[in-house]
Amino acid sequence: MKSKLLVATLFGVGLSFGCVSEQHDVTLTANLKETGPLLHKDIYGQFAEHLGRGIYEGIYVGPDSDIPNTKGFRNDVLNALRAIKVPLVRWPGGCFADEYHWRDGIGDPDKRPVKVNTHWGGVEETNAVGTHEIFDFIELLGADAYINGNLGSGSVREMAEWVEYMTSDKNSTLANERRKNGREEPWDIAYFGIGNESWGCGGHMSPEYYVDLYNQYATFIKTPPGKKPKLVGSGGHTEDTEWTDVLSANIERNMSGISYHFYTLPNSDWQNKGHATEFNNDDWFATMERTYRMDDYLKANIAKLDKNDPEGKIGLYVDEWGTWYDPEPGREPGFLYQQNTLRDAVVTAVNFNLFNKYAERVHMTNIAQMVNVLQAMVLTDGADMLVTPTYHVFGMYKVFQDATAIPFTIDSDVYQHGEKQLPAVTASLAKGTDGHVYLALVNLDPENEASIALNFSNANFSKLTGELLTHDAMTAKNTFEHKEVVKPVSFSASLSDLTLPAKSVLVGRLQ
Image 1: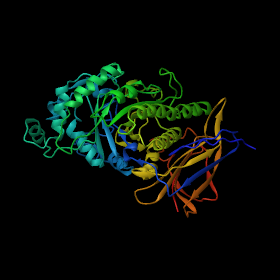
Image 2: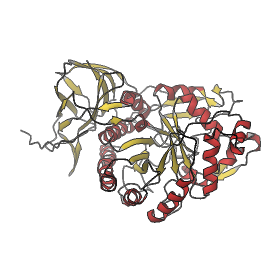
Image 3: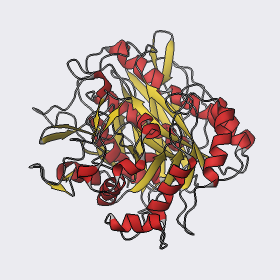
Image 4: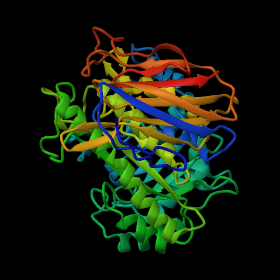
């Protein structure tokens, strides 16, 4: 008999510690009449930085390209991203943002200055994709914009004028310049970041120094009524909570949220992170263990917000997250191109369940990145493209965008490796905007399936119908020769006989 200790959480995952068996036993309990916080659509946001082939070739080929495009943006990539309902795009960085001067990217493309991308590969940056082009892309997707301003090497005036250029509806010189460049109506900006990673590539600042700069810059971010974006403070990363603490205690106005960054490496060595596609059970567990640290890191940062902002006005925005492995052999290391396997899909679902768990504070996240960089949705090779296992998880979880969380507890066996252990199964449960109740389950264990018992009150459901993502091989991936090795399959099961395969992601509607 296994001993179990149930740890209840208000909106997400608790876990119980016991012995590992060939089949994990999991019980999820919920009153389906209860409601939790909104799972904001922007939790499922994307990130497009001027890095490697993420922008050029990845999403933009130019209007004269033989690759079918709309306004220079690849139709195949646009169609793929529309299908997963990308809600938000962060641009132009990342580290690139604090070297980006917006005037370099407006006007006649043939006359724009060519710069050197000193952060990512030392390659030429033509500025062919600037403000007008990226808003074309975002509007073609039907998404919202998260613009990251240059605090590190820019000026207050430069940032203020960029915001005016983008949002003014007046007869000002800047607004008329925008009109002359082809855009009559102002754009909407959902979020505007004042700097990026100011502790590092954005200026190597202390949080106290950054607070003063933030207050100065934010003072001059002015827009017409109803057009002001949510302003984002540049926060900390990994186990650090100092930035969240200092910013939330000292910035009393003009800040909707604080950014936070955490990347999943199979180990702690940034010089030897691990291979993207060649790994064993030890590497799989190490990756899951490290990604699940997000739970503790979110909890610690939210504790600082609860202390300094008890009214809950400030969000925690995880605007860079995802897996980061060693560069692909034979490729420019600074381009951060990596393949994507079933392991990445499971990592994605684990993080989604954590973001949903803490949705009272986590209102927005951006995976790094959208195309051809790190944990990408899409990989391209000339005119060819494929979607990755991570892409499919985003598609499966789109039912949770703007859904209302349903509080639950989960009593689960553990996935154990050596002396370390993780919950074998994590979950999300919510009422979608369509009125249906959706359940997501992810099995972190690559070898053992899980028997799922659902203990629901105030409900009359008999089956779960949706999509299942898994594969026999933990290293399974999609390639340009075989593009559909890892893809979701239809799933339907009685609630009285629900089994979750090893290393799998399941999202379904209760019926």
